[in-house]
Image 1 (cartoon, rainbow, N blue to C red):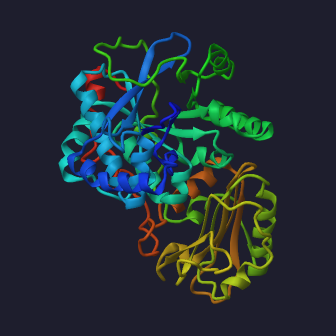
Image 2: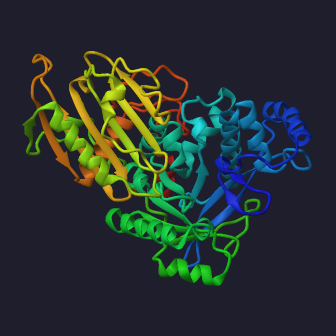
Image 3: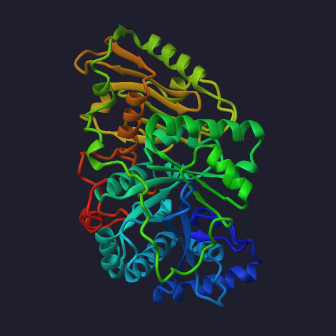
Length: 474
């Protein structure tokens, strides 16, 4: 929830290094403790408008450090917090400050408040002194939580916990920073966002080929899912016209409205930003193979399972894009390096690469530092399965195998599918089982619908008070 010093909006993750000298960093680091202890941050708000009617339909909260200090610039503030390992605490403080300001203002309940969530926050509980402000916001505000594809690489299960929690609370999800890279093309269907934020500034920094591929992927996703397109970075009337030409419902940028304090009065918009109803949440699944159990399968030996997986792997890879790769060796006792034979090296690092298996270390193959190992227990359903799931620009691919644990070195029942709904559901099931950074690498328990972590950005129990204030559901 940050605004960089040059006036270009961005997430706290985009703050990165403040670009100052060592003495600047030292001064900022010394000031950070006091800022966090006093909860001395504020927020400004940038309007989001309906591009047809011109009505303000939402506001994005953007953090501000204490005025006149070394941490006034939010990029410097978040850079100092990142150096100190306190980004999650700062993120909670910023979000609570925005919530308190909006609740106090009496914002019309049909206006949507867009707030960013830093990946570091996903597995960190809300500080007790901020919990009242956060839970009150959950009850009273119509919030859209902004996440980005980088969060999938940082804390995959935490990201989906945020999505699950938002849905349970009647809140929405926006996929932010689309245009930074082609990575978001594979991630969009997994997150299932209500709003896709396509950034014109970021697209202009890409090659024409990349920009075209990203834009067309977004348009295809919106056509298939009904998600709303929000074009950000609108700095001129020509930008606004281009956003309308793309079919964007909403816009954001300095040409439309600059960040600032909340106004004394906002008109009630005639239509709200549409959000997916919580009842569309998918059912739980015991394992990937259980999800495709109704599909035709074939029974083959392990060598041909490997050959099928390599066929899919070579087909799915696209130069210039970072795929999501989820694999499992089950109880396979072959050396890890041997299991990786026959798979070509990626041209660019994967956004996320995880290998599940019984007894795996955190780094299962030393020569592949991007590959994360997740250990499954002997009685885990994953221990009886071998699979390769790839999400990439070409689409989703999956090879899924199951073997009877009572038959040693027996045949493997295999399903190959490119059905997007099935593969994305499988991917979500697996991603929810990846432990957070720094934790033991044992697979998390399978997800149960309606049960979400208590450390998500909403905090407290699920409510839908803003719906009651609005007088209708949807």
